[in-house]
Length: 437
Image 1 (cartoon, rainbow, N blue to C red):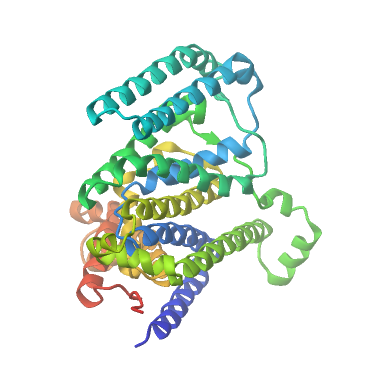
Image 2 (image 1 turned 180 degrees about the vertical axis):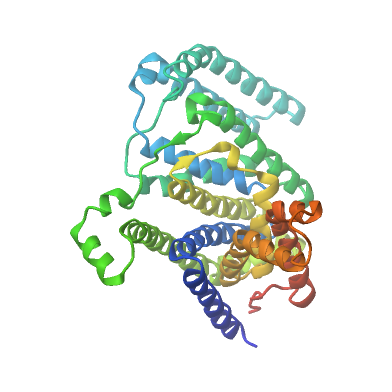
C-alpha cells in the first residue's frame, strides 16, 4: 500500500470516528476533541522536524508549550497599572542587564584570546555578577508588586493586544529560549541531550509556578481574551434564534458548537500553514541535508556541513512550532495554569504521537496526533464500558468491582502502551512511514 493510500484511508477513518462521536455522544464533545487533536498535531509536527528529520531528541516539549502560554498573558491581558508604577520598569531593566551579561559572556568567550579555563572563569563571573545585580534591582519591586491585590492581580499584566498576536509571539519566545538552550546543550550526545532538555523544561515550569509577578504562579491567570465570540453574546443574536428553531437544537448548545467551530477554523488554518511550510522545507535541499546529517553525521561533517549549526536551526524551528501550539492551547482554555504542564506525562504523549504516526512524515505526525489524543480522551468512557461488561456478573456491592469502576480513567495508560506496542510490532516505521527519496 502506497503512502498516499494510507493517508486517505487513515484520515477518512479518523473523520468517520469523530463524526460517530458527534452522533453518539454530542457534537460539543466531538468538536472539543477535534480542537485538541489539531493542537496536538501541531506539537507533534514540531517534534517530528526535530527527531524525524534531524535526529534531535527534545524532551522539553512542555517547557516550550508553557512559554507559548505565557505569551498569552504578556500580549493579551490588560496591564496592572499599580504594579508598573510600583516597580515594573525596575524589573525590566534588571532582566535586561542579566540577559546582556549572558550575551557579553558569550562574546568574550568567542572573541578573547585566553585559554579555555580563563574563558570559562571570566564568563562565569560575568553571568554571576549580572545575576546578583539583577536581584539587587528586582527583589524589592517584586515583593511590592505581588502584594498588590494578590487575589485579583499581583502581577504586571500584559499589553492588552489582540490574542491572535500571542500565537506568533509564543513561537518567538520559545524560539529565543531554544536558541539559548541549544547553544549550551546541542553538543551533547542524544541521551544526555534528552535528559538536559527534560531538566530545562522542569526549570521553565518551576519558574512560571513561582514567579507570581510574571504569571501569578499557581494562582493562575483567568479570563484570557478570545479570538472568537463568547457564547452569551451569540445567544442574543437573531440568526442564532432562527437557526436553533430550524435545526431543533437548544440555543446554549448551538452557541457552544459555533464557538468551537470558530476555534476549529483558526486551528486548521495554523495547522495547514505549518504543514505547508514544513513540506517545502523537507523537500528542499536543506531538508535533504538534514536527513543526511541524521543518517550519518560523520559523512555529513566530512562533506563540510556544520552539524551543530544545522541542529540549532532545526531545534529552534521545532521549538517555535511547539510554542505556537502552546499559545493556542492556552487561548482555547481561556486560562494559564502552570501546574497543568506536566513534563513527565504529556511530553511522552507527544512523542508517542510521532512514533505511532510515523517519524519523518508530517502527515503521519498529524494522524498520530489525532489518533493518540482521541484515545487519550475516550479511554475513560471506553474503559468504563469495558470494566462494566467484564464485571456485569459481579454484585455492585463487591469491593473489587467498585475499585475497578472508580479507577477506569487509569486504563488510558494501558491503552497508550497497547497502541505503542502494536504499532512497534506491526508497523515499526509508523502508520505512515517516511518517504525515501
